[in-house]
Length: 206
Image (cartoon, rainbow, N blue to C red; front, side, top):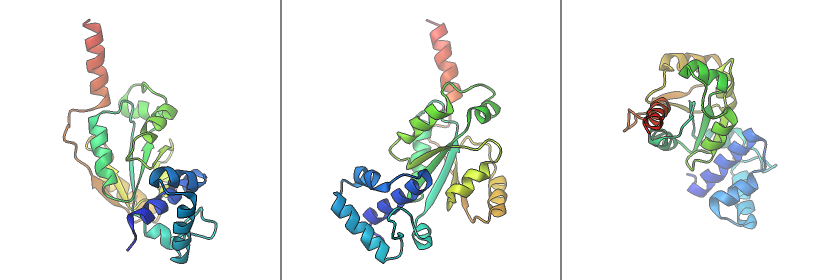
């Protein structure tokens, strides 16, 4: 059984492996451990054959020991429904990876241009404490990103149109056995479109 600090280190190494960055600084920020403590804990994980000798990548066993959750959306205006949904998604596993839709995909989904660019939306979501990594999606094939992340759980928000069957069948094509979780929001009326519409009406009413 892994300690929480070991899970945090493994999930951070996993995220940095996708980003292509050095995990030490990020582990330091997340745990407040010193460099010596981090090195000592990584050495323990190398002995358990969960981390490779390079200290920057996970072994197959290390990756299998982590439960990764994938969630996606436009995230144009972050509202309480998003926060609740992402918190619920994070509770399902060790690491939460969020994919924001590209600007073109957002237009197709919402029938309007997003207020914020895909890079701004990525930065916004990356700043949320429950999110371990935020990626910009692929326009032509969502399963390219799914294959890159290889999550054990794919979390769908309460207002997402993606059907479970479509996700399950897409995962089978890339030999991924992922469970689909449908998350509920306590604020079903919360949506970026509704907030934008009400805000626009209130401005015009002034």
